[in-house]
Image 1 (cartoon, rainbow, N blue to C red):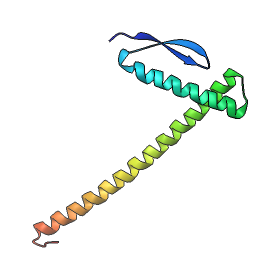
Image 2 (cartoon, rainbow, N blue to C red):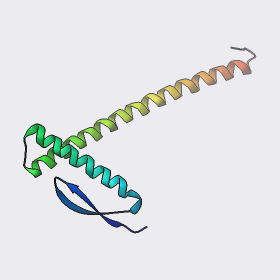
Image 3 (cartoon, rainbow, N blue to C red):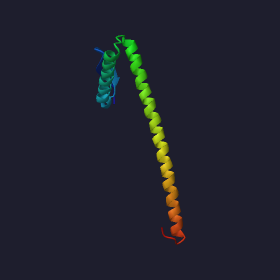
Image 4 (spheres, one colour):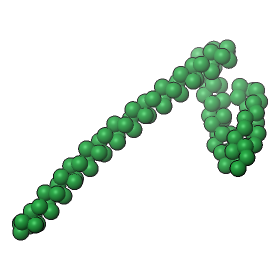
Amino acid sequence: MENQAVEVEILGKLTRVNCPPDQRDTLIKAAQDLDNRLQEMSQRTKVTNELKLLTIAALNMSYELNNRSDESQQEVAQLNERLEQLAASLEGAISKVKQGQHT
């Protein structure tokens, strides 16, 4: 599948980006999300310097990704712990059944 050029608008400026055809809609949605964040941030902070806005937005998005990654790792650790508990419980139940004891 060959990449195709897609135009997205961010802060009133068109930018041409190449992407696979099946990712076009996702790219457009991401660009709209970024533009919305930048517009909102500009209004909220009164910052008009585009480079500064983009830097702050990039830092915010990186922070969000890191938090989500940390949360995901904690959830995986909790699931693994729970699976180990279930496996131990099942092993105990199987052991009792093999010994002729019913739970």
